[in-house]
Image (tube, rainbow, N blue to C red; front, side, top):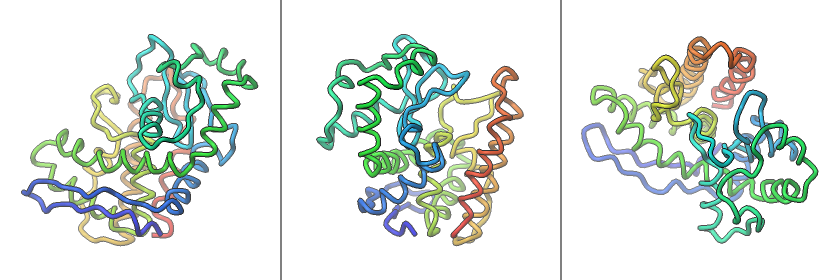
Length: 261
């Protein structure tokens, strides 16, 4: 249970406000290890990946995106933000990571060929020793997400989005579910993260929820809505991306949100 993940949410019609979401190092590590398991089976090698068909590296327990120099994609680039988060907390970072803000490998083949390089070794060491920091980074992103989602939602939807967020946050498993999904598929506020005009992020998941009870029913509805948004994403995706191959794993992941609730 991640009882330390507490959010103060104003009632509909008032100004939204939030206290800092505070989690202990132990809770952060538990959340981080579960997300690490989701993303790369808890392996150190899985902390540095470049998926086939992608034009960016995926790093850390959350597969934070890092684009090469001059490459711009539709997805939010989160790895440089993780590094900034670490610097703000005086966490030691490998020297070479301070020399360039862009990914030094320009393509998947180049990245794969560098697997045994000194740069890659130091990168993996940094990522494997900062599991709790990475989880805290994801929680920090979560607490910034609600305000962004309320800004993006239509006025008619804002009260429901806020209410559904609070329902999920109130469940014992809610902190993990919210942190994992916003890292997994984003906030849903970027118009570049759309297929055929429809998003799949946390905002869209919450918009499709309409229940009123807290507890296990909120977690189950969140899990079901997330699965529906992922199926819609695959249906809308460009055929050349072959996203159907990923859907079974995605659905297994969001099913975990309703467990232990």
